[in-house]
Image (tube, rainbow, N blue to C red; front, side):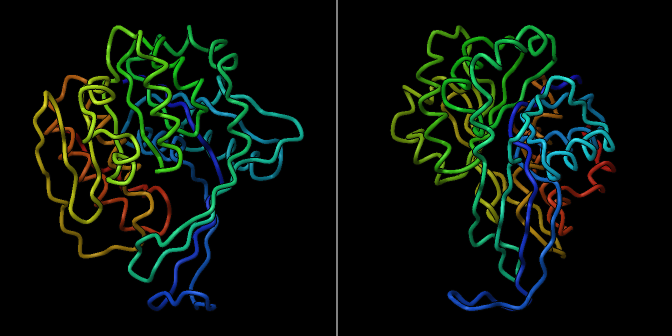
Length: 294
């Protein structure tokens, strides 16, 4: 498929402890710096799965921004619809992971994403609507997300990213209420679902989402469609190095399965992608290219 991904691109600084984490103390471990960002990670996974991917974002013109653009090109992600902002600091995300790979917390410096304004999106909208599917993350401002929801013609997939940024999506879903079609698929975790009020107010915001995927970490994913919810257990893995990129890989698998796939089949393939993603210290595992959706 030809897929347009709209969202954040940042450098990930990932610190993982060698022993169980001790709060308010210095912990031995390793620190890695690598390309990241929810939108970029999804785009990278989709490119590895064989999709033709165009990534739409805002880059800073610093060293991190240059490295990210070069890396996108090297892995087959197009960036011709993106913008480079002079004098801007590229987005950066710092995470701290426990020795078992689970993320304990993180800090996101994403100020540059505020430049992805409705006007910025409008200038690209005609080309975006020519893709087979569109993926967006909530690094976009609420107003921009609202415009995308109201104007997107291909099936739209949205990743809620975090509980803090899910509030933008809540506002955007209300802004996009005049859109004739609901968001095709939304992926969030339990905290983000609570912020969105999807369980408490399913007739309102929930009615604007055709398929809802609620990631439950090691417990798997819950899929809601047509008012019914089905649980899918996580696939067992003998090796878990870093779980940070698992959600992005899962959603990429769901998107790659395509709108024609059942929600259940898409979820199963997404979980397979997540299992592979956790077997590397990087945000994206190159071995995902060996997976085939059937």
